[in-house]
Amino acid sequence: MSINLYSALAWVEDVEIDDVMHARGYIFGILVAWLIQAPSLSRNLSGYTPKTTVRPGFNLRFILTFSLLALLDADRSFLYGLLVGNLILSTLAFFMSRLQLAGLLFQVFIPALALASVVGVFLFLSEEEKGNSEMGAWLLPLALSLPTMIIGWSIPLGKSLYWRGSWYFPYPRKMPPGLSRDPQQKFRHTLLPGQSPLRGIGMWLAAWPCCIGSLGISIAAIHQLLSDPSSSVSGFCVPLVGGGVIAYHQSRKLFLRGRRHLSFGIESPDILHPGTFTLYLRPFKEDQAHTALKEDMHMGGDPLSRTADPLGGLLFLPVSNRDEEEHIADALKPIGPLVAVGAPGEFLPFAGAVRMYLPQDSWHEEVSQLIARARLVTLTLGSSKGTVWELSESIRILPPQRLILMLPRRMSQEEYEGIRMENERNLRAVPESDRNRTWVRADPPSLPRYASAESSRDPVAGLISFSPDWKPIFTPLSSAHAPWQNLGTGLIRGLRPAFGRLTSYEEETGWHCG
Image (cartoon, rainbow, N blue to C red; front, side):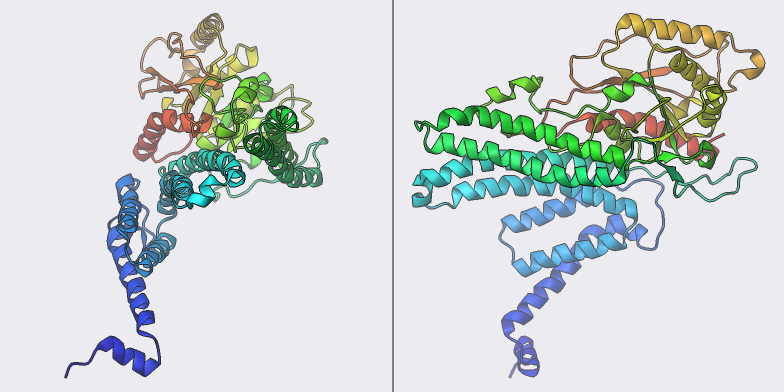
């Protein structure tokens, strides 16, 4: 007579057969997760650092497999086992693989879950509930605004995480002569007179109820308009909808203002280890321009026209409270922290790059040394004498792979051509003994001809990088038309070729600076 193993276990341990079956589902799910993810993660479990990044298909196929099994109504214990097994493998894997996996989850899984929840709400409501005008008046604004906000938040975050996990820039294998210190871990910070960390924390805490309250006002006003449009109160609801959206955008600025109070400056540039940071050069007037927050996500829409939207602009509300410079710092984060020279007399530092402050009478020599020690130099073009000098000095000192230029969208062709001609004059005046050894031609490198970019509200029209023989390469940045696109996602696409050339340069030379 045959004996059922599960019955025996249940009799011995006094456990229900259903519990044993659930345990089997968990175990089987964990094993299947290992089989799905092992090809992409097995090299990383021992701490081995891969030379190339994990291909997206390896991580994406787990998400696709899990989604397919869920649609086929697989056993819940098996699906839970898949998730548990994948989480266990992810914690054991290389940090970059975990970032890539998290990025794919934010780009695919969370948006799909948000859309599925909306569809599920309308599909599974009973006929009585659908006919309830009170419930429908609440569901319509919530079902249309919240999922788009979740998607607008999760996809850019996922792209950023996946981008950071796609590049591996280790500390130099070959140290420059005379340097033997460990990699840069932290900075010694200093505060400016206008900073108050306590005030910054207070602004950050106050921003949450302000944002939630302003959205609540708009949603409540829309509910009143939909439930009883003929009411005398409804006439006051129309301006309340637009006013709530405008108040929401103003509340987002509290987050930014609070982070400015919580930012720190570098005490001295001498504490920066060579090859551990990205130097950000720009005209000081760009600082104020780069503090703008994205106001709306409509295609080419005017932020003041959001009240003309039937939902008062709630359909495509941006949830990010980062300004433009913070997007730049985030896109360049795989290489190192973004460091910039602060404007003289600055009272409150800007968010994004970590500021340092140099004496006005000797800043040329200090900046020249910072250019030579930076792993990458990113320069926003400008027509001021100081910015043009920084451009010429960067081309004179750096190899081409370590320089990236940003072309502001508001820069006219006349201003750009003036910068290009002045830079050529400066480089031709450099003595032969001080010229860059990487210049392969008799004439010094030059910027490309002006390329008109498509109309957009994004601040950066394109990136200028250089091939190993100093041939300029212009990469236009596509406009942010979709709700989940912003300056950060555009920079991620535009920086990929330049990052690839920097990786090849470091693999060939083994140096990150010098």
